[in-house]
Each structure stands twice: as C-alpha cells, then as structure tokens.
Image (cartoon, rainbow, N blue to C red; front, side):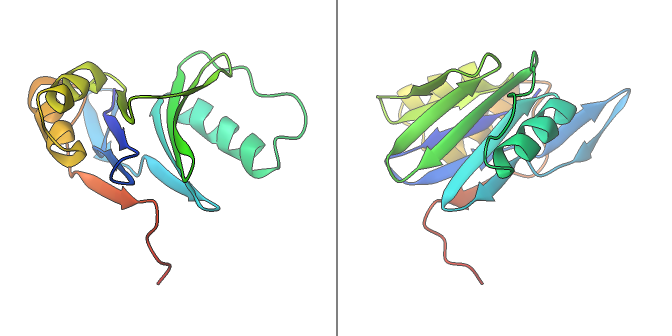
Length: 143
C-alpha cells in the first residue's frame, strides 16, 4: 500500500510516506539512492530489504524470491519498473506509478498533473497511501 511516481522527463521520483501495519501506520522512507540511480519500492518491506541487500551486493548469488514487490528505478537512461519476477521493463512514455495508489497517480498524470501533484491526488483517494509527500531528484547534489 503505497504510491511511487516516477517522471523521467523531470528527473524525479515521488513517494508517499505511509507504511501500514496492523491497525495503524508509521512514516517510512520508500525511495533510496544507490549510486547515481533512484529506487522507489511498493509492497513488502521485508522483500524490499532482501532485494536491496542482493542489489547492493552486486547482484551476486541467486536473486531473492519475491511475491509482493514492485519498484521503480530512475536512471539517466530512463525509468524502469522492476517486478516480483525480476522483469525490468523500460517505461517508454517516460512516467509511471506503482503501488496501491499507482492507478490514480497515472490517471492524474495523464490528465496533466506533475509527479508531485499525482502523488497528492493518489493519497486523497487511496486509503493505503498518505503521510508526507517526498520528492527525490535524480541529479541532486550530495550535501
């Protein structure tokens, strides 16, 4: 239950910050920088952490078995969706969204919203998305 929105055209990845568990939710970071790339994750936090460990270890060994996992990867070359089965698909239209709020965010972008606005709209209609909207720039300089 998440909204991750990527826009290659503007070089940003946007996320909500709501992580649900039981009867409540806590704020959580859902976008990570690995090298020059940004990765935004929806699905199981446990599966995200397994994938991150495998990826940060140079993708050595067997890829973790994942069932409730989807990610967006924003690179200088494009925007990619990474699915549970390992498929890494280039998003040719240049923008996309994943998670429970993904369809609402895509609809908002098709209607002219930018990535941040799309995430905000998704949070208004998707019960699984909310909290602070976080914007990450691909070319942000380290501080």
